[in-house]
Length: 102
Image 1 (cartoon, rainbow, N blue to C red):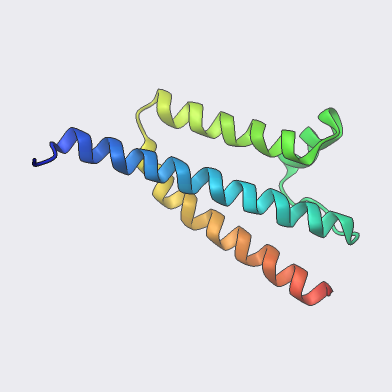
Image 2 (cartoon, rainbow, N blue to C red):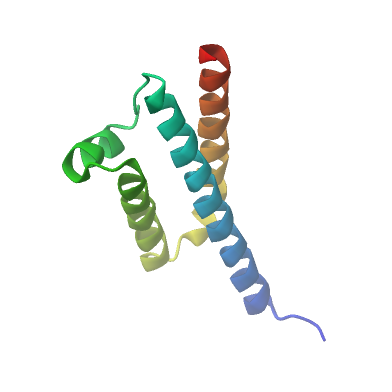
């Protein structure tokens, strides 16, 4: 059975959202590790959210949720392709920071 164009777009959107959530969870884990070694959060919004909520994971989930809601609301889920590339760079930077500090 051949998939319709709408089904393909839906599958791509689910994949993009899954990758986005996964990269953010990896980022949160690595950032938490960096903080435990004396480092800090570079994202000013997440840093502020951490001071308000007292929890890195809650701050990351809040930011991730805001981004997803806005992209879904305005029908721009395909923009996650570019956001995911940026998240890969952030995760790679975190890995490098950990490698240098260990």
